[in-house]
Structure formats: structure tokens, C-alpha cells
Amino acid sequence: MVRERPAPIETSPLVMREIDPPEPADDELLVRVRMCGVCRTDLHVSEGDLPPKHPSIVPGHEIVGIVERTGAGCTRFRSGDRVGIAWLRETDGTCKFCRRERENLCPNARFTGWDHNGGYAEFATVREAYAYALPAAIGDEAAAPLLCAGIIGFRAIKRASVQPGMTVGLYGFGGSAHLALQVLKHWGCTVYVMSRAGIHRDLAGELGADWIGEAGGTPPAPLDAAIMFAPAGPLVPPALRALDRGGILAVAGIYLTDIPPLNYEHDLFYERELRSVTANTRADGEEFLRIAGEIPIKSFTVPMALDEANLALTMLKHDELRGAAVLHI
Image (cartoon, rainbow, N blue to C red; front, side, top):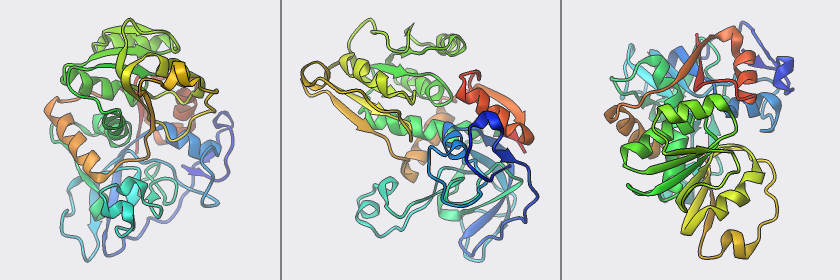
């Protein structure tokens, strides 16, 4: 499914095309795709919120598949191994950010489904060093959302400096938040969910949220930390005001509408902090996948066919998915 030109997802900008399978370089794996999760970032690529880098692109970066062939220099994986491919496809490894173990900030980073063709297809390639081994306890469909929604949610947890036992607020409750909540409950946190959609609130309740309210509502107690999953800038001021002294709000999305003016005294004073989340490091992904296998984490998924990619993204845009859509390739 190829995005040939950005357009509102309701106009079906993804079209099915036959293209040649990619050829792996010496340090790459050729992966036969089994599943590909549907992520909000794919929506931003399809609609042009993320500026196009190529005239056409195959989206998709929550890829679960089997190694079909390895490049000449590959040693970590062999043909037949199950692997995951995520958003971060490569970094330069030499810049000051890579040297400081902050490769997610590498100015020369490239991304699956934006810089290079992704997983809305039968085959994909990945540099072996950026592929993930997946927990044996988690099946293909359930593993797909872990590779972005899960990893980014975990990165947001770390950016918000969450510690076990804290009181944490989640703003927006979709594919990423439903995985983050399970990690937080595993750590003994009290979790309050602010969400606008009924189906998401029902799922939050099933997963053990301690309180569920309106998207911009006031939680029942001050928050030690909060994570913004909804791409809605107007929610930032009420989320900051809900923080206790020294609390941190981490914005998890790659895209956010404009934030209204902030009042220093009411929104930021007492050392409240607003932080962004930019991609993830491979170490984040490996740590999260280990924890996911220990819990073991449960993904709520909606299986769909490859040619339903436009429909899946439309449902995502309009909050009609209970959990995360996963394309069966």
C-alpha cells in the first residue's frame, strides 16, 4: 500500500501497487512481513502532517516478520528468525548525540515508513543492528503494536521520570496508552486516564485505571507525572495544572497541534516541567520488550487486511478503534 501523494485519509491516499521486493545490503535483513501495526505516525505520513521525503512511500513501522535472507555481513540473525522492525531505522553513530547514548536525537537519523519503505507490504529491509528480537511469550499480532506504540509509550514514561508507586495521568487513551498503562500498573502506580471516547474509557477500565474522566478534566488528586498521548495542544495547560509540585508532563506524539499560551504562575511554577518525546533509542526498545515479556503485556488489537489500510487509518483518526489495528500481510 503506497502513499503516492498526501491527502486526507478519508480520500484513500494509499493505493495498492506491485513493486519489486527490496534487495538487502550487506548489513541488512530481508524480512517477509507477517503483521504490521497501524500507528498514528502513519496517519501523519499519509496526510502530509510529516512533510514527504519521497514522491511515494510505503508506510508502516510496527513490523513483525521472518528473516527471509541476510546480507553478507550479518551475524545476529539467521534465515527463519522472527524479528521486529520499528520506527528508528538508522543513525550515523558518530554525532554527539549518538556518542552520548541519545541516538534518538541524531540529526542524520532515518525512519521506517518515512525515509524508507515500511511494512504495509510483503517484504521490508532493515539494518540488522536496528532489528529486534521479540518475546517468545507474545504472538505476532500482539507483538506488532509493541514496536512503536509500546516503545514510544515506554520512552514517554522515562521522559516523565516515572518511578514505581507514583500517581500518573494519561491524556488520550489509544494504542500507545493502553500498553503504557500496563507497565505503570506493573510498577504499582496509581493511574488516572483522561479521554474523550467511550470505547477507550471502557478499555482503560478493563486494564485497571484507577479513575477515568473527560479529556480536559481535573483528576481526583495531583499528579506526580503525566503523559500526553492525544495530539491536542489545548490539553497541555490543564495537564500542567494537574501536576503536583515538581511534576513532569511528557508529550509522546511526533505531532501536536498548537499549544495555547501558558500562564507561568498557574502552569509552570513550582518546577513543573513540559518535555517532548522524540523517537527512542534501541536501548529503550530492548528494555521495554523485556518488560513486556515479563508482564506479559496484553495488546488489544483489531485485525485487518492489507487493502484495508486506508480504513484502518480513518478509524484511528476518528477514535473508532478499541486498541490498535494490525494489518495481516
